[in-house]
Image (cartoon, rainbow, N blue to C red; front, side, top):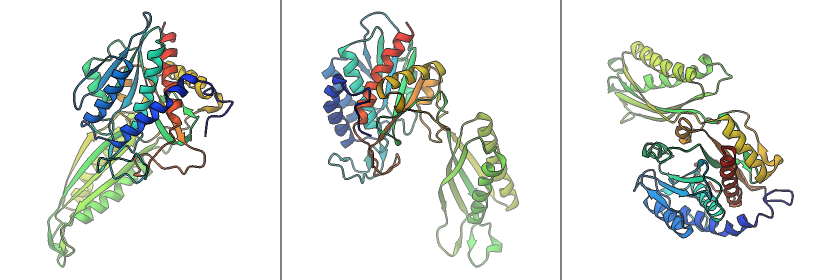
Length: 396
C-alpha cells in the first residue's frame, strides 16, 4: 500500500527529505551482507553514517556492537532503539540491481532495512533532540548466537527506561504496523539426537540393529508429543530438519543423527516436550536395543512485550499510520527473536512493520527471493523517531 492522502505520513517533509539517503544506505548494506559475528564492513558503513550525522558512538570491535548516543536538549529519560547487523547464508535470487556481492550470503531477513530505518530515525532525532537521551543499538548476530546478550553484558544499556525494535514483514502491507502486548514470539530450542545401532549386511538384518529404522520410528513418535500430549490451544511445534544415516544402499546403518527444533510459548509446555523427547528416545532405544542420546541446545526465549511500553508504541504507531493502519495480533508467531533478551531486563516493545506492496506476492523471510517495498523505510524511521519522543515524554 502506497502512502495515501488520508495517511498521517503525508506532508512529513522531514521524512521525505531523508528518504533518498535511507534507500541509498539500505542498498549499500544489502550489497555487502555479513554473517553473525563477522559484521566488520557493515559496522564500518554504519559508523561512517554516524560520523556524517555527528552522532558519537562506541564500537565493540568485530563481533561486537555499536552503541550511539543522541544527547537530549534537557535532562530526561533514556530510551533505546535497536537494529540488527547480520545477514544469512544463502544465494540471493531477487535479481535486484543491488543484490548481494558476497557469495553465499544475503540479507534475507530485512536487517538491511532495519539498520537504514534506525539511521533515518537518528537523523530526525539529531536535528531536533527530544528532552531525553536516545541510544541507537546496532547489534551483531541476531540470526545465530544471540548478539543482544553482548550488548547487555557490555553495560551500555544501564539506566535505559525502555527499548523498542521492529521487523519488516510481508504479512502486512506498507502503511500497517502491528503492535501487541504480551507474548509475541515463541521459545526456540534446538536438539541433536544420536542413534547408535549395530551395522551389518543389508541381506542379514537379524544380525544388526538398524539405526535408520529406529530413527524413523522416533521421528513419527515425536510428532505425537504435539498432536496427542499438548492442549491444542497452546501453540507448539516439533520439526526434524536434518536426518543423516547410512553409507551404502546394501549396508544397514550403524548410526543415525537427527537435528531439529522445538517451538513453544508456555514454559510448562516446553518442559513437557523436552521431557517427552527424552522419554520417547529411551523407550524406543530400549525396545530396539539401540543407544539414543538427546542433546538440547537452549534457544531464544519468547519475546514478551511489556504493557505500558506496548501502549506507548501503539499510540506512536497510530500517529504515523492512523488508526486504520494499526494491526492487532491474533496469536503469537512461532518464529524466534533475540530481542527477547532485552525484554527480560528492560521494559519495551517489538513491532511488525508491513512491507508488502499492493499486488506483490508474499515472499517469506529467509527466502532467497525475499525483498520488501522500500516505502516501509519512511514508516519505520518515522515510527522509531516518534516512539522515542513519546516514551521520553511518558517517563517525564
